[in-house]
Image 1 (tube, rainbow, N blue to C red):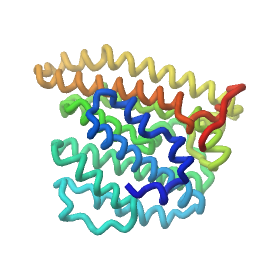
Image 2: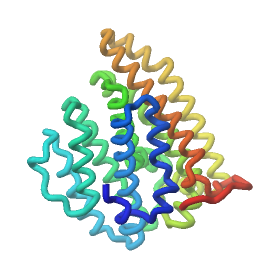
Image 3: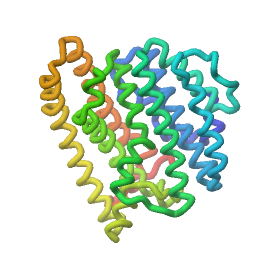
Amino acid sequence: MGLLPLAADPDEWSASWLPECAAWCYPFASTDELFLFYHVYAWMFALDLLFVHTFKAEHDLDGAQAMTERLSLFMPLDSTGRTMPDPENPIERSLADLWLRLTPTRSMAWKRDMLSAQIDYIDGQYWELECMSSGWVPDPAEYLVRRRASYGGAVGICLAERAAEAEVPPRVRCSRPFRALMDAWTDIQTLQNDVRSYRREIEQEGEACNSVLAFATLLTISADEAATVVTRLRAARLSEYMHLDSTGLPELAKRLRLDHDENEQLSAVMKAMRDHLAGVHAWQNCAARYQALAPGEETATLHGS
């Protein structure tokens, strides 16, 4: 995809374990689909690393804005390249390629959801840069909401739909219970990421956006104590997710009187979401990127970045 020279050195890329992450998250995907999912992850990871090594390192808000403003041009809803401008860099070229591979067989509703999710992810990277440049640590309430976007939680939902070869029925997707399920599903991943990545993000990269730092700042406590708070919050979010998955969404389906096809579509996507969550958990526990000593831990092995 031509992304490596732009975003990271080979050791940092290798430490990410992105191929393993894709395989764990989508265990039933065909080989072609698995490569496609991996390429989506690779593009998102490359954009994140580009911000870390270029825009965040130089506090280059103007350069970041100039890049991010063009990216929506490479995600046309007609799923053709007719209206795309010529790509100016590997990020644009790879996004154009991905979009034309991801979207032709998907519904217009799915394309709109994926476009919105990717724009939220891109904007989230810029928001983190703004926080870092100003030295402002967001409070935990704002952080959790904004982090769902900058982590790419909604992108993950769209990929789960593609993996399941199904789509959440529109009247379910816009419902409060499903939105709560999406939020809890994303929070479980982001909170674990923040604990595992704290040393690298805060102490090495100078980030301002991390839930451990947010709670430590708000409560005036140590990083170790804040990591305990975050871990407890993650447990609570996992409990909420499990309740919604097992009880809340089935009850919603009954209230809405979903027909057989709608129930099958919803069940398939929720199964794919569970697979994805299990895969991310394995990835965060095994990938070299996450093996640095976390707050509150006494021993760990440092690998990768």
